[in-house]
Length: 420
Ligand code: EPZ
Image (cartoon, rainbow, N blue to C red; front, side, top):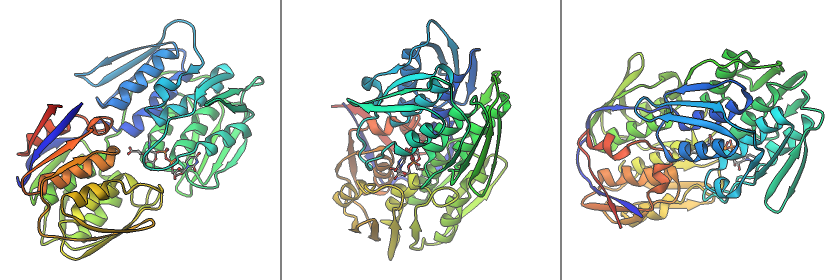
């Protein structure tokens, strides 16, 4: 197993180029199962979750070519279509459950393993399954597998989600695009990643309309024709590097971003005391004055993203005063807290609320990565800490950050990846 050794205390300066969004790539690549002709995606990040998805798409009978230098992914039909998504792949990537939708829509049947356990919460898939049933699917969950069929094809329906789910919204968009009739979704997720999926499908001939009131209307079409699509930049990766600049009291130019998608993060950073200057597809960030404590509550987009909560907590450890973070999306997303405390952080947890008392210095320690964003919060903490931090189990980090240590080292960090 690999680990990172980080020597803290270096001010970062320079440029970071942001990769394509992992969470936009996953559903968009999965939607390619709806197509008969080859599809091509640009700006696909070289991260472990994408390689896991490539394996799943291959198991389902598609041929996949990934040009890692150009970050271009091509998917075409190979042999016979397969409808079976095994546990061996699904256990490592929850987003894999989205394949149920295109398989049902295109072939009328699917057998998909329930996704594996997850450290940040139970993460059930009831909203996906209930909504697919409304579209006419028959679903039977047995022995860890979702056995689904739609003998008469999927039919448009009205779906009102009882709570907002990114994945369930994406499932239903993918399922309804080729369904007969119109599907109306209320209380839909409107994250930029969901909108990127809609934009891709619309370019390919789908008829999907959406508004900021969480309504999505999908008129089923008979076929989709493939158009090349460039995946949006990863807003969470960009936000993470913004914190890296602030936590080290450095200055970074962060390139290949969509600043519109970052407004919810920028508004908090500006209140804390960041100077952010935006350009067409980049921004510069550094401290304007001494940073001030903050309060955040995670919410569905356009609210503050749960995927940035751990990074802000690392920053809060370095801000004098009390900062408060309420995690409202996942029930168990404070796994980084005990590890930050090993580095000297002063954090109190009460249910879904964390209160962080800023201290002068964190100290390097041996810590363990527990999920993707928790892991990167430890990297951020280590960049600002005195001495060397060893981060174990970094496979979590590799799931979603492309060339993390290379990007940071180019800006003056001191990070080494070593084998156990
Ligand atoms: C997506 O997960 C992201 N993953 C997550 O990013 C992100 O944290 C999350 O959205 C919230 O923004 C991908 O896009 C691949 P949800 P998703 O369905 O779709 C509950 C990262 O670090 N729920 O919006 O799985 C669920 O338990 C990852 O990159 C149900 O109850 O999230 C959670 O409490 C981690 N039943 C809430 O809804 C369901 O059927 C929101 O989850 C589905 C979800």
